[in-house]
Length: 90
Image (cartoon, rainbow, N blue to C red; front, side, top):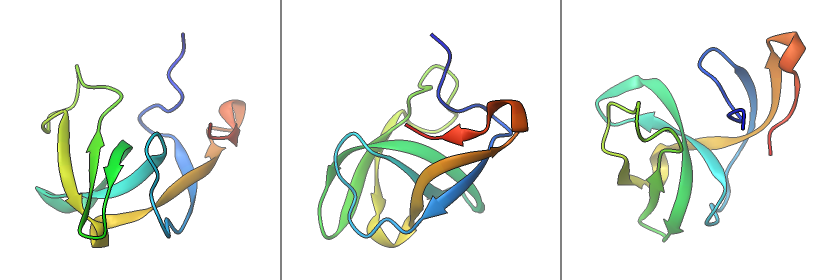
């Protein structure tokens, strides 16, 4: 099975007003605030979002952790580059 997202994909994001379990979200890397990461939501609360990586074997961060709600940038909805892989993110 081919991964839904790859390094170098360009994504259109929408604000994540409320994260739900199973959704993909884009979050700020706690170690490097300029870097963005795509994670899957496990649990959400008003204080934070527990997330995990779909690529746990290659993720330099802990495979699972809690991110402050303010560090959730948005939800990816469309990949627009590379053009041969453009389309909705599911």
